Length: 235
Image 1 (cartoon, one colour):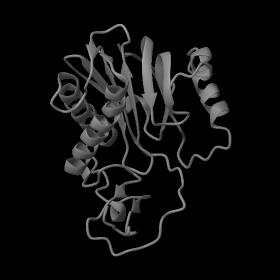
Image 2 (image 1 turned 180 degrees about the vertical axis):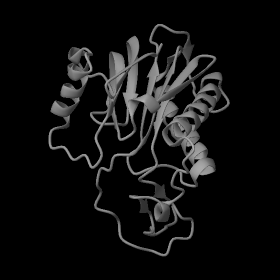
Image 3 (image 1 turned 90 degrees about the vertical axis):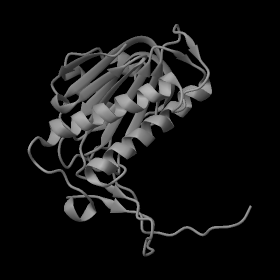
Image 4 (image 1 turned 30 degrees about the horizontal axis):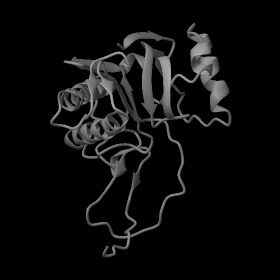
């Protein structure tokens, strides 16, 4: 599972007849033979994402039919050469990590307005796949496990839990050994946490090298801080 091929700003992660669940562009649950990570240019704004993705995949000499048939696609401002992967037990994870657009979550916010929302290239994208056949709930829960591990890794490395455009894709082999759960105490969940930690850390190192990455909104070109306060109520 997850045979990576990188060409011309596109990463293809081959995994034939695999069940995928994506939180990214055109997300949802589907069966496909691969997932893609497509690098977008700086200051990218696009009115037709589908056409842009098809053009990038074709220019990289990959099979556009896979994308047309619903293969998961992640978009990132990080160069494809800086993607990194990790393996442990029944799990593989791949990540790209750019933190030019950090998303802070202060625990004592001053109050403020909700943002209007804007896509800014940067992004920490994570793809996690297991050789087990996960139950529907376990596949969905693996998204939470991966996002939690990503957040913990980024908090330690750069002081923020994510960026404004992060996404997670999880994958399960329908022909694998069945697994009902994927929490942190399970073999799948624990391996996923370790693989996400290692792949995100390696991707950050690849992206920034000897440079210091931004460590918050004040240190970054873009970014948001969720300063708005919600009203609490009793149940």
